[in-house]
View 1 (cartoon, helix red, strand yellow):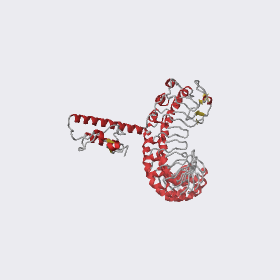
View 2 (cartoon, helix red, strand yellow):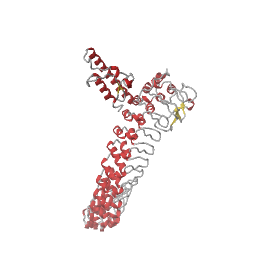
View 3 (cartoon, one colour):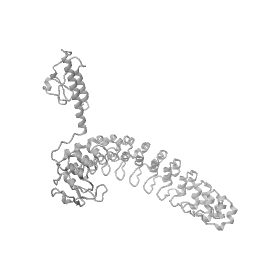
View 4 (cartoon, helix red, strand yellow):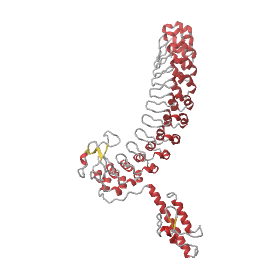
Length: 535
């Protein structure tokens, strides 16, 4: 928009009009443009001497005539505007930065005086080039190597952030530079899953940020399983809080990462929490089988994964963790009242240690569960009826260090809601308990043995039928003379002592001549099935 004839003349390179209207010099448009800016925007360098009074003036957004010339690529206008070198717009950007951002490579050599200047975010022209993937500009801006922005990020980190591999290879001098939080370029790459960056940044493997976290932890947390084999040197590393990549992956439900991080199983963080406990807290039932080796572990407060699942009402996880039933906490559990994770009102301290209470009492902040608390008590306190029903046969009648049972927790819970179902389940809480069910591994072994027994009994019936038909006359040994022991060794009268097999508790016949007989097949079946358990 033109506000006077001076601007019109400058825009069109009409020197005579410019000369006749010089009285209008320094006048600005609504956006803050001057006649000089109009002239250089169109590349009319010949107008600059007539309008030199306007050199240094800036638009409302802080741009100068030099910046306008650079944006249009008018290199002929740059030398006469040397006096505007170093000026910044409202975002702190210089003409050199605008040359990079508008892809005006021909202007960069003419703007060397602006090298190493930084915008309001601390970014340099080199950082802008790296972020935009302008690899051809990097050699022209190499004097800015090693600089950091206000967050401590280098040009290399910005290149990784943008996924520009050609820029990364040119910025290797910055490998190892960490931002204000200690993150490296490799860690930024792991956050985006840019796996192609790893060979270029392998020197940063095993580096840690200010929280002690590694690139592997960031990758696992985001579910980038393809990163894990390439960062195997970092497996087993723990953050300042003691968390591992396995724990981070479990928290976020990254199932595909768990099998690749099995080397971190049974590691605990500073609070004693395991990956299995986090799986239980978040209700990731599909993780339980993958984290089975952590069954039975307790955190520093004595909590098990089952307790965590019960407290958070994760029924599916509780069903898979019942083998941890009957375990009790070892210390008090307290919390910060302002925490959003847990409820704000607690049972009164007076309620603990003074016999059973059947009334509801709001309690002061502080201890919530004393030593000896069970998963059933936690579920009762939190009003999870389905969980209570699952745990009742295994933990009913158990008492905490104050002598309280799950029934007391249901009657004295500080939580709001209808506790009718939970209280009905616990109304006649007994004291006779079932032993906790075995772990899934034991269950699988038992199922295998049961199948062996059924198979063996079937073969014995077949053998009996053949005998009755006199088809095996003269080919059989005494069926009481042979056994198969757990180590796949045939037991005769001398070493078996006439006792049944320890695994299947039944005798197995054998022929002396035919490997295809029922007795031989029985032996082969047993050996095949037992091999995975007794190699």
